[in-house]
Length: 155
Ligand SMILES: CC(C)(COP(=O)(O)OP(=O)(O)OC[C@H]1O[C@@H](n2cnc3c(N)ncnc32)[C@H](O)[C@@H]1OP(=O)(O)O)[C@@H](O)C(=O)NCCC(=O)NCCS
Image 1 (tube, helix red, strand yellow):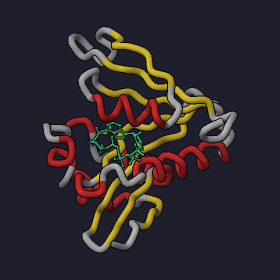
Image 2 (cartoon, rainbow, N blue to C red; image 1 turned 180 degrees about the vertical axis):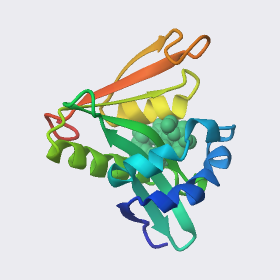
Image 3 (cartoon, rainbow, N blue to C red; image 1 turned 135 degrees about the vertical axis):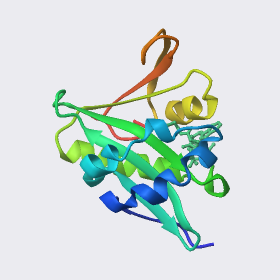
């Protein structure tokens, strides 16, 4: 098996991504990924591809309001490629991009029931806070993840 290659996203990658999110998450997720994320943040987002097509993606941004922070909105890996280090590779590439842009911290969130995401972020060196009640509106509790970019992975 040839390892997936990682590249910067383009705005027109939106349709390929939105076509798989419900399947990859196992529940309806399209509403959480409107086209604006690719239109406006494709330069800081990443795609992984292999011979079977889209293998994974990361939607990330450099916060325009919090100028020392970066934010990861979504990461998804095709089910047959999970636990092969691909999400970690996408994260390391995004963290390097954020560090090079002068960002000192990266944040992300997930639902309290997403144990895979919580374990992945813990493994990636993020601190975990939560559940934070009503973070995304009434009844939408979330776990918060935060990691400093001052030090490298494993430090
Ligand atoms: C969460 C997700 C992105 C992880 O992707 P992945 O490519 O499988 O993760 P990696 O292989 O890079 O994992 C790195 C480490 O994170 C931890 N980890 C990742 N997924 C895990 C899981 N499901 N359970 C426990 N630990 C996990 C492990 O420590 C792993 O290292 P190891 O395999 O050597 O033990 C993937 O499961 C996914 O796409 N899930 C559905 C979408 C989703 O929930 N996205 C996150 C919220 S936006």
